[in-house]
Length: 249
Image 1: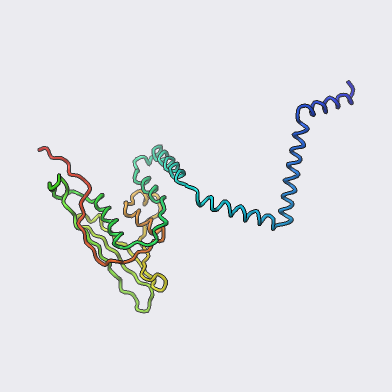
Image 2 (image 1 turned 180 degrees about the vertical axis):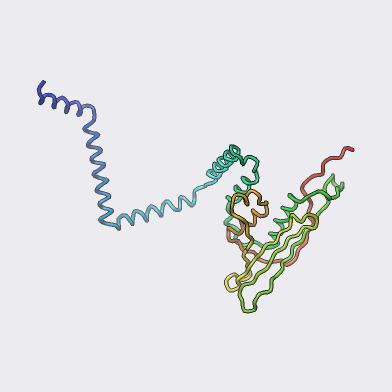
């Protein structure tokens, strides 16, 4: 077989096995791509129009997307990490992180009376029961604990628009439940609404030891939630959620 016949055989083979069609398709695709890139480079307005249209479609689509499934996946991943590392005993760390991940953008203002109610719920769950008497009115339960709220205003400069105060929550029975929450008000812009100045550490160690109510305060602060002082003093009697252990003696 001479050279000419060999070339004819190779061409015939490539025509029959689809190689030629593939090469043509690739060159056409490359040519179109190059032409479009040249078009966008030469006529920037075309690219801007397409970019604008893409944004108009993508941004609303992203805003409407339900990311709850992703949070569930994140939850499972974090749980797996905690269970496979030295953090296995730090359940509190995982719980606090998951709680902070849930943003409440609907709450922009909270009354101090509402915040006091949240703290009372925290006291009911976490208050120390040692030293409390057991009552048997409707089955065994611990006696109520007395709690109070007071807003203490700091003396400022008469010429200053900035005011400062402290919201103080106190539990007579268990001082570990007590909280002092600094707040501030710039009357020129805030009117009667106050900012939360409560500070917490942002490192992993702080998150591990953060209480449930501290997490609540941090979420409110991160969400730029304002406080309205609808009350200056409040008091309540809180029933501990813990149940007394049975005494069979």
